[in-house]
Image (cartoon, rainbow, N blue to C red; front, side):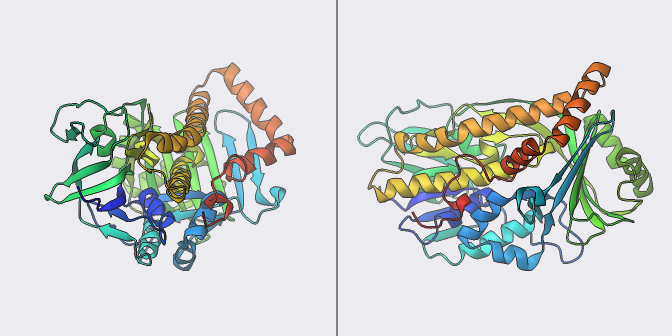
Length: 428
């Protein structure tokens, strides 16, 4: 069969589009399949969904040429972060100046990120953005061996133990494509993961994250604020208007449903009671929405001819603001692995090639899953002894500047085994 593409990316959201841009202007032929057109950033107000972007992710965006469009649109730097315990007396303050940086990260609307990446994709002649187009099934040819196939309605097929010569794809509208590597960047309910027969293990938190934009009487001072409540953390994230914040309020499902059903005035009163007066009065609130919170981790990220990244591979609690940054790091690493293998004239669909990506990313992602789950459990209890110990830990950490600096550097993506793009290097 004629090979249409070297890489087909299922999912044109933030992570899938980042991978595409990272493969732009190379010898690889790339297609991005996206079922639904992206919504543009709102002209009035803000997108309900925002992301906390680390310095490492900014470096990736800069390296692929998408950062200028984000700066031109709108973003908000995070120069400080304040965290405190609603059930105790523990608190901690992070300041970017302590690690010699002008900021710790940025708050950017998801739609701004996607729009900038999509515009950048248009600059690359080796990338085709196919929208609307949705994946339906896959078939992997082993070269003379009966193919292993799956479809959305089909039964589980035998998983090949050797690299396929290509992956044949069918779409819901009948198109047939083929690729050396199919990348699943299609979210938490990944069809690629299901078609490939990769299990994902985890659990629901029985919580929802409520998102909305609020205006306060006092400026946020380019500071991210997070208060740990017994029912879940409440974050107030700075936007480019110094009096506006995006909230992410994690609450038990029943409580979240109650909050969503309140009139605006009653919701603001509940928010004021939960957050306190650190930003003065909550004066206005925009539309609200909620999404379920869960932890999940794929048992494997790769198979011959298939790779998963972002939410298709892992989901974490949003309390640390790291979830999407893990996905951006996945994209940068996978791009590096594929381009290095291609440059060495290796079959980029070989399991041995893709396994390098899995080994590089899986441990770090698992560690972040464990940390966020641990914090969620630690601050979800009102046991007096545990409250005392966690407050003691927060206060001791706040007083230990070298430890705080290390935490900030890790959270900002400045330490660790970083891919070239996260270090600002573009070429391979």
